[in-house]
Image: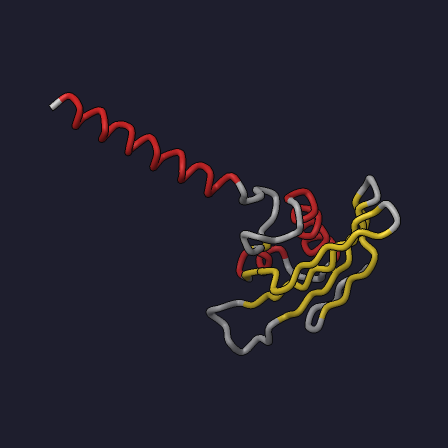
Length: 127
């Protein structure tokens, strides 16, 4: 009976640890959903969300009604800096009359993060 409860305790602990590891990769400062194997690190993901929330003309309530996910995210190294190209799709799943917004941005990391380009297909965004 003792060995059974010890095994059960270890199994429960392993389950809790697996759950914590799964949530650890989610950046808390970004509402953009990235794939698990994205080449874009958490600080760049948070910066991308800041760009969308501050430079695109969404109403504040719209930011919480829309879902944002990175459909394409790439990183490449060039001359001592890393360049991230991110394509974000945004829609209101409950309101299909609105078109899907495509936001494309390029972020350069040369020791500090800066926005190089920003375009959008539906909402106006200022680079």
